Image (cartoon, rainbow, N blue to C red):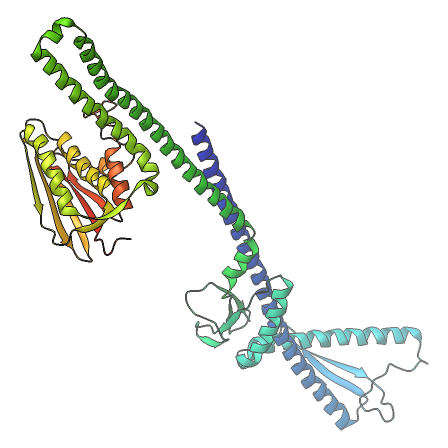
Length: 500
C-alpha cells in the first residue's frame, strides 16, 4: 500500500511538473507571437505613413511652386486658385495680398484703417479659404496615393534598411530581443528581396500585409531562427526541478526493486533453513534409531542385523556429511578469493576421475555416463578441489532431475576453442528447465519448484556455487535447455597460459 501511494505521488508530481512546463512554454510562445505581431503592425503603419508623407510633400511642393510662379510672373496683388471638390465641381478663390518691398510672395491682411467688422469678415474668409485649400490638397494627396502608388518602385516604398531599423526598434520595445530575418513578397507571393538567413520552408514565419489599401498589396514575412532557444532559456529554471524529480523517481524504482529482491531473498533463506532442517533431521534420526537398536542385546547377537545397522549408519553419515558440505558452500560463496588455491591442473584428468567415481551412481539408476575428452590443450589454472566439486555438482544435478521411468543418459565433452580456451559441455536427458527459470538458476537459494513444494531435495546452493567458482577461475557458464527435453551446461575456461 505504501509503495502504491508513493508511486502515485511521484507520477502525479512528475505529471504536474511536465504540464506546468508545457503551459509555461505555451504562454511564452503566445507572448512572443503577440510582441512580434505588434511590431509588424507598427512597421506596416510606419511604411504607410512614410508613403503618405512622401506624396503630401510632393503635392505641396508642386502647388506651392505653381502659386509662386503665378504670383511672381504677373505681379497681381490678388492670389487666385481653385480646388476640386469631392463631387467633381471646382471652386475658385481669390485672396487679396500686399507685396512688401523686397519680399516677393509675402501676404498680409487689409489695412488697419478699415473697420473692425470688415477686418473680422475678411479674416473668416481667409481662414475658410485656407481650410478649403488644405482639404482639397489632402484629397489630391489621397487620389495620388491611390493612383500613383503602384507606379512607384517597391524598393523606394519599402526600403530594406528602413524596415530592418523599424523592426529592430519595435521588437526591442516589445521585449523580443532575438535575431531575425525578413522577406518582402509581392501580390503573387514571389519574393521581392530577402535578408540573410531567411528560409521559405521548415521554419515558423510571421507575416503581415503592407500597403493593403492600395492597388499593389505586399506581404512582409519575418522569421526567428533562434526562437526555440529563446523560449527554452526563458523557462530553463524549471528544467532542474524536473530533472531532480526524475532522479528521485529512478531512485525510488531502484529502491523498490531492491526491496522486492530482498523480500524474495528472505523468503528463499526461510525455505533454505526449513529445507536444511529437514535434510539434516532425517539422517540424524536414522543414525539415532540405529544406535538405539544396537543397544538391544538381541540385535547384537544377530550378525546380519549388526551388519545392516552398520551399513545404515555409514550411509546416513555420508549423507549427513554431504549435506553439511553443502551448507559450508554458503560461506565459500561469500569469501571465495581468500579460500582458493590456484594450481595448474589437467582438466581431462580431473574430469576422468570424477566420471569413474560418479559412473557407479548413474549405473545404479540404470543409466549411462559417457565421457569424450577431446580437448588437446587442457591445462587450466584452478583450485583443484573446487573444480572437482563443480564437475561433481553438475553431474549430480543432472542425475537428480532425471525423468521418471526413463533411463538417465549423461554426457560430458571437452573441446578446444579459439583464443586458447577450453570448453566443457555436460548434457542430460532430464526434465529440462523452463525459460523463466533458466534466467535464475544460478542465483543463491533459487530452486525450480512447484508452489512451495520442491520436487527434489536440495538447498538451492549448488548452481550458485558452480557459477561463483567458474567466475573465480576466469571462465563463464551458461545453460541451454528446453522443458522436457533435457539440458546442456556449457563451461568455458582460459588455458593456464592465458588465465588471469
